[in-house]
Length: 293
Ligand SMILES: [Fe+2]
Image 1 (cartoon, rainbow, N blue to C red):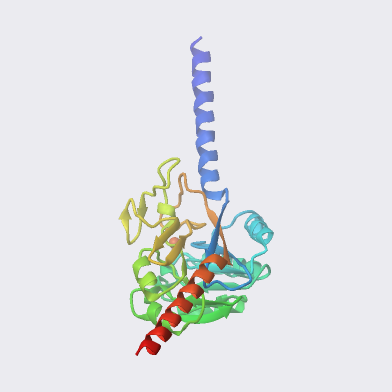
Image 2: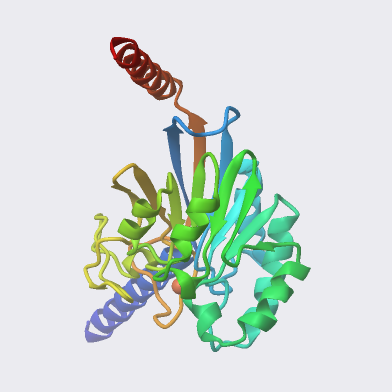
């Protein structure tokens, strides 16, 4: 009888361990795609579809990243935006993995990358940047490029707190899309005049409270941070935060599946008409004022 009890306890313990292992694997390798559809008065006439990835940290999903690539290719994006931390600062093997990943992404669509704190912290940004470019990526290192009728502004991670986000926005025309690694400077990005910002960095708070949007920790924001995922509005700007795909110091995600973000931008015709009517009204009032004088 005692033998049976021991056998049942052992089997139950093994089952529990297997379930925990399965849960951990799923939490870290089961990709989720989150879609956001936005309408902006300043958006280009033709809609733009962007796949937004962040914080890969050389993560791999399926053999040679086949699961990740399949999911991205299915979206048929106009371009892919990568908001930093494609590597871990101190893991040497990450560089080769990142190069392979960027080549695969480039086979799907044009790739635009900004640096994250890990690229900057590795102190080898000057060496790593050309490697990414050799794989076909366009690295926006405090630069603006017109893509699909929008001004794509990429700020490197070391310049987020200085005047660069403002200078780039001032020099940009039309719809202004910012790629920036850190999300917590949302007020600066909004003040600079961007329409939309794509960010990452917080890894969704790394561990999330089960079945909530509440993350536990993010570097730079501390415990129970505000900006870890989803969409946040500040003034006229929206900020999309990717929960990221890989891990850095903490090797585990809990209740926080790795995320592919898909953003679609369309023109808001009603808002555009309102703006035009408002401008016409102001013009008419000014004319009437002139006549009255
Ligand atoms: Fe990261």
